[in-house]
Length: 75
Image (cartoon, rainbow, N blue to C red):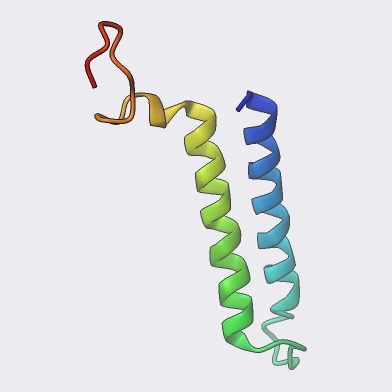
């Protein structure tokens, strides 16, 4: 994947997180239109998606042992 795709994953995670935070309503006591667990799932899912995008953008998968092919053909 190229860097632009990983940036898209990060932006998608930010959007999901923003939807979750917007659905939470104001802390002044106004009742939200969605359940609390739905907001929690949206916010945590968005943050996890952002972390996945950041990990991909930095290329962390390249240095995890066992996931990279060695130049001499060894696994």
